Image (cartoon, rainbow, N blue to C red):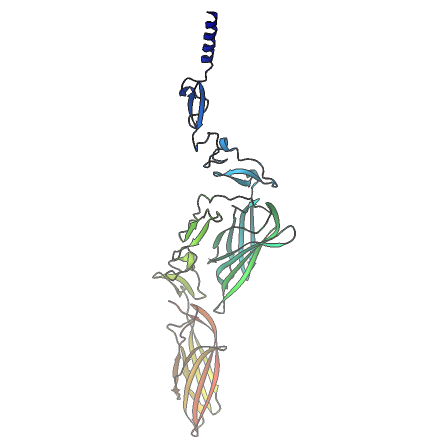
Length: 454
């Protein structure tokens, strides 16, 4: 009897020490990550696949999406005073400690070929070459009165390493215009240069800006090129971590003329590619003009010279006479002795002279001639400026003692308004004692402004 009681007590003790009787008794691990089961009084927990908290770092998890399974994304990067392991969105990567990042701003004035520019830059220090960009704004603060249609061609940023080597951080083709006073151009510069260093610093940074412009002198327009630059006094600290970063949340530059993209397979920076034919693509396409797309083609406003202004007419940019312009008639007397022949000539023209409606009137009159002279004829009339010929007519007009008028028009000019120093060239012939003779003479007309109003 006593032996039976001992056996009964042992059985009861074994039953009371069981961990569970059924599956629901197993609650030591969360149901969200494990499937519990009770087997012979012992709880077993089967981890659910691809669930954070299942004590397994699954292929779909990492240190940023589930630190409980994969460990924390933290700690300094060996060999760097700026970089730590940290989460960038959902990836554990190397980046600069946020409390070490300081904004750097610079604003400088630059002059070139009579033009004045303002350059504003903004960037982070230290500068992460894998994700940061340098913001640049160029403003045409004061263009020369003779220069217009400024076009920024290229940007180049250079710096000096600790061992005194000069390296190029970026060389970028731009080809964008600064059309008028106060026009601005904004660029995001992606800096890149070969370096084995995880971090370092550069000195003597110089930003060079190459541009072209049209220069107007004495009514003539000439394309020219020039350069201006900005220098940076402070050291430029950079990091180049062994990491990649996701694309920005948005690449929208608010310009309908560009296609904004970012590729996860390339360099993770935003790109803004011009859309063919779209206003705002920085190209004055064949279907655009200054009135339909001023951002690409320039503004149809302002002065075209001393006598003309630009304005939009029927959706086209036209040059029109300024209000209150006074047309001044000019008359030059020319007492011309040609040996046995003397002419009294009068040359009349307006200043400004409209090439569409005005002519230069040449009045020729025989004042004196020897009895042996007859059949005096003006063969050719030319309007010259140096070696350039602006107009030519061949009237073959015979002269007499009464005034004979010959009109000379100017067919075209390159600009709406041009100032020219004109010289009148006259070729003539006559007969003397039955022999034909020829000669020519010139008469400076002075400075005349030619206009082509529309």
